[in-house]
Length: 412
Image 1 (cartoon, rainbow, N blue to C red):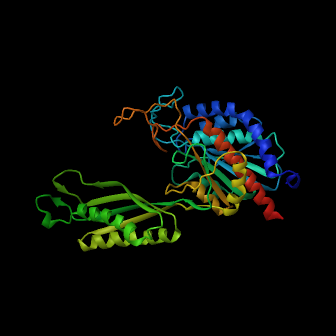
Image 2: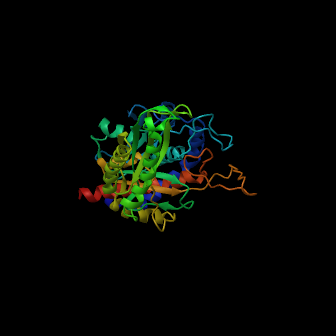
């Protein structure tokens, strides 16, 4: 913790910001390169190699197969700052010269996060840091099992004195340039379920000698929505989405099985536990009442993402000092992020950075005569404007210094 008592957080923030601004032009070019060459989850090694090539003076340690981390600063307590390497299986429709090719796209802003973390690392290597800074380039955020789980189970962070883990995510639902922190739950826990109804197949002309699983699964799908409306406290956010239905092979055949697959999203652990049991009970009883049987599988996914109150308390004044506005009401959503797993090893903070669409993208709306930019995450035309890189980098810088303050407060 060299010179931490003698150098205030705002002084360090000014030093890092000055160096950050020198790195931003290179970060913009790097973002375009990463955007042009995206990689799917689990296949991110080319992206990781590009970043490692762009960090030639840093010693990199591989983690979770395709990810890596770098360590700056003194030994002892360290703050982990994470960004995500993977892209999505989408074909880009932005039309910009540096758009990706077919079938893979950075449609969740991970290219922005990567460039922002790169800029922070470049700035940090020129400043005397109070505590260690671990830059984590994590794979497989978009899939299960997640990259965050792999990083934790690898044990690579167990030997580090991790005081905090910091992340930031672009968010078009937050006003451009605004930073949202917010203590408590900011993202939902997300679990997947699959329900298979087993009936008795037969000819569609003779339903009385069959057990049709299709109306059974239909009744269950309707009942799932009633679970939210009638068994969850109405001021608790919760969502059940059925995203896949499958049954049958021909119009005149009553099938043997029907399947529904979906996701449960909750912001309270008690609701999560309740819905796991309630879904199973609903499916089994609905099927039994119609002479069928239900097979229910629930796959536990990402935990609820809960921001540490102390990190928020340390971060907010730094963001304000930078002249960036804080959200009047913290952004909270039923989206999920595997960043939540890091709460198993240290206090965590996920910030949401408001972004606007890059003006180079022209999205024609057939319903109006004008042009609109109302696209969101995972949309084939989502492309945050380039100023978002600096804003994300500043948020990450503030989070790092907040983590450093927390490490100091904890050790004294």
